[in-house]
Image: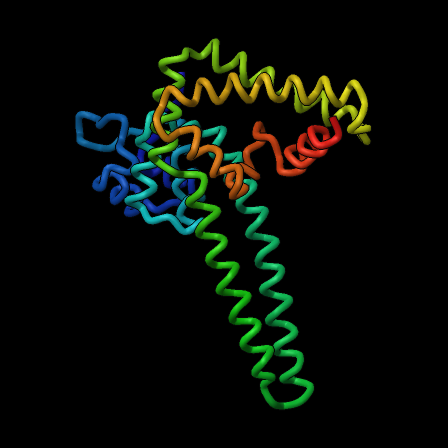
Length: 249
């Protein structure tokens, strides 16, 4: 049974002020579970996870209204989203390293010469603009409401057992390919991987086709590398390997 928390206890545990928690309650972002007879808000320990999600998504640049929409969706799985957010944050760390390097070079040249290198200024600004645009696209690519809604409806129609079976077979195939190491694309083993890949692809696409536009949306997502940070999804290198096997047969 989860422990109940007062608003003060939740604020202390999360580092979020009571004023902010009241605001979240007022706008429907994080509602109190209950109220005492005296009218004081009561929360659950589970709400700490919700606050963590809110703070992370705010840090990634999403507005409170959009965060509310995400948290209220029935297909919002906290564990999956946490893993995605870790990947996104890792990418941001890399991006910040590039920005720092660019700014250090810019200021270093100014300190050495006493004048600004305007070509370097333009290059630095261009890099920052590109990284900012890429960041926005990466964050948005993981939260397409229409695609997630269709996938949720499809899961309900096909059933968890069917979906889990396909996911397990994909995971098994990708694991077998990875364990094969430096694979000879002309070998019988490579051909067996290709046969399994094609059979699973057909079965998966047939399932996706039950929802109009879903196959195209997911295919486009793979072409744009939108699922690069999704642990269960095949990576570009694996698609390239399959293409090489196919070309060698």
